Every structure is written in structure tokens, then in C-alpha cells.
Length: 112
Image 1 (spheres, rainbow, N blue to C red):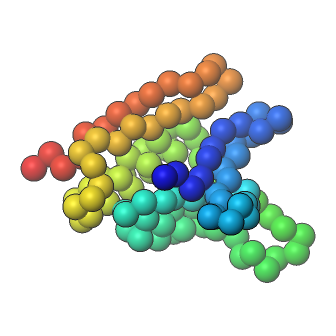
Image 2: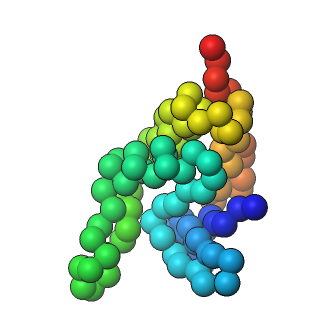
């Protein structure tokens, strides 16, 4: 069960939403779910420098990355989770959504 969704908003900007079992949802700068989330989320927090939620007016919750840097970060996160979490699979599929459409990149994990 995926408890998050990502895509582009009406302005063409990246949008990530998380939601829970009772239907509450929130737009966030980034998110992760699954058995490896305890390994991945601290890396995302560190690399994306999440802003303080108490700052008024509210600011963006994530640092802007180039597409290549964002893909590399995702690959690094899953490589780490794949080595330490037995429930993380053997391959990560990364769907890249941009103005040109959707494309898929894959990376094998657990190569040892």
C-alpha cells in the first residue's frame, strides 16, 4: 500500500502528497514509505535541509535539486536501504515525471 503520491501541479512544479488511513493529507517537499523509510528519511532530511515548520510565513519544505541530482539522491538512498533492510527489494524503479512525460530508470540493489 502506497501512502503517498507525486506528480506535477498546475504550475508544472513537483508535488508530493502523503496521506493516512483516515484520509488526512498534506503536501510535503518530500516523503518516503515502506520498510526502509527509517534508513532513507534521515538522509533526505539531511540532504534536502527541510525548513522549520514553525517559520511564518510557511516556506518550501525542500531544497531544489537538479533532476540528475535528485535521481542520484534516490539511488543513493535505496542503495543504503537495500544493504541494511532485508525487506527492501532487489531493484528500485524510479519514475521521472517532467514536461516531456514519464520515463523509468531502474537500479539493481544488493549486488553482493
